[in-house]
Image (cartoon, rainbow, N blue to C red; front, side):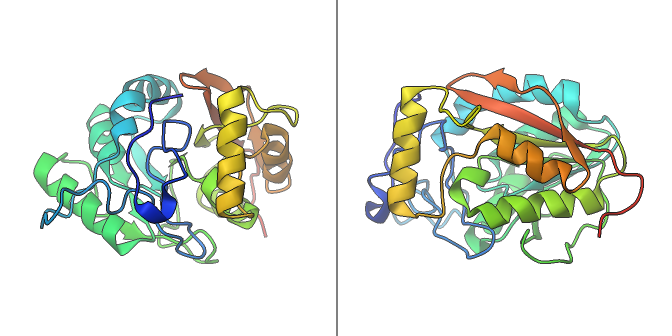
Length: 250
């Protein structure tokens, strides 16, 4: 587990290492407060850009995996983009795609826009407001979906809605890539993850590290088939679910 960094006082018990860690984004269905929405900004700064220290630690290992999973053309939809640092770092590696960031939090969207203007990746689109709990998404089709460090800091219903939405927007064979800490066969994969899970559940009973098997079953019910998990540093995983339905799910 990465070394913790400072968080706002209201969330001082949550140690946001790479186990979660990287920017506790606002929950996509009830707009929960983002851990770091204030902590990532220098005091009295008018710069809307936010920074998550864990991003610098996880972005290179994650990018290496994404290069083998994401397409080199088409639209890559990033759900819950948070600070926007991942979007700005990943987009140039997929230069012939349109990298579409999204979030529900106004300050996150402002941060994404500010990073985008500063770094200017040519293929990085303006961020969209996207709430996974809404039946109509602002993106009707995508060639891949990436969601980093979201499902453990949102109610299970948000994970189900994420899967449902991806089943609608992805064509057959296209991937949904989830990154973060996960349980395997009902058990945590590291003591630090178990401690982190308890901290999350104390903060909000609807939060918590999700089990790979439960995600697999929920995905299967929506026409998404899970692949073998990819082990990542700091007790994280990449989970890949692919659209297998030839018809749009109901």
